[in-house]
Length: 433
Image (cartoon, rainbow, N blue to C red; front, side, top):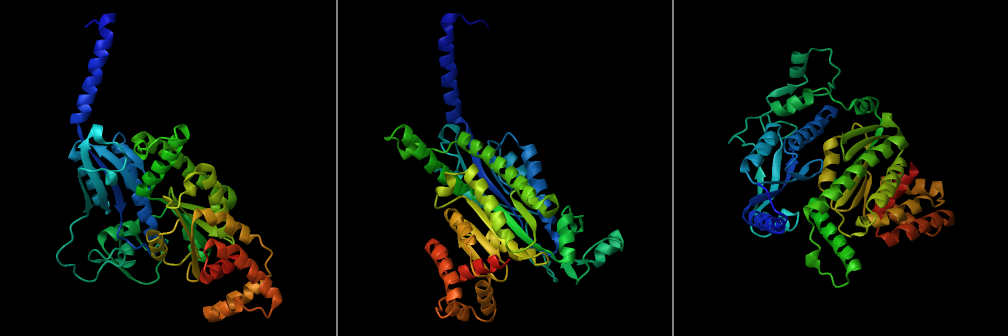
């Protein structure tokens, strides 16, 4: 077919009208989908669940690369017009032992104004998809997932299958279901963590998670502020978080995570850093003071990567740092991470925690540099082992002036940022190193 110059504009107009017509008629699904697991990892080999999660996410990302709008370490924003797309994603996840929590909306493409299914009106629902459970589970119950019959015995069944020369943890006997047994039976890629656990090193668990719902809210507010700079009369309705904006954040977020891993390796060396997920790490620590080194590194990188995002009170990025003995049951660390409500939490496992926001990290790092009397910190920490109430009395006691000056410095730095005595006591224990 040939087109005269005089026909070019009319033909373009027809194409534009056809595009509008198609977008008005084309019904698509927009879904936020999160992969979850029921396991409570106990032994080092149980952390293979994270390798399985990463592999599962990679399979989905590769198979449906044209449908994925955003991908975290365990969360996907996807669109599709055929239910078979989600059915296949669901089958992949369930086959590997994961369950899905989803929120979806179905609308015409032209009505998909924002990249958040929970905020769109129309035909939508929230669903949980999991493998069906039997009406009765015969005892013993699987000790890892608590969701199936623990018909396999660890390490007896493992040794009978793979021989007695395998390097495995043999303390105690565990009853496991077939899925959890399979996960634990795989050789762990976390060889450094296995070595640290064998000789009892201290470690820091770091997770920098992302809440997609809060992300879209924060991006909407930031975009609105940007539009107001261009036009003071701009309205909030114009600040819609479209897919292109989410895509741009995805690129920045990926760069941030890669940079975070690189910075951790630069500071602590590759021999002392394990990667569980692209947003979760384990660092071999020489002392509790290494928590401040991780905190400072993270703070500097966040300010460089997302300076405006850090100013938001309801921040979508949540960082968790946990210092503990490497043999400490990991499921307790994981529970703290999953239940986190503050922007930033620092757990000195078994000894206290600090829950704060990103805007106070600079104040905490400044407080660390104060010239405190070491004996004052030591005395406070030792008294707290007997009674926190006695330690609080000591903290407010003016009779020992040298100690009192150190305690007053702590109050001066930390009370204005909302830290109570228990949080200050945790800070003191971290300073002890």
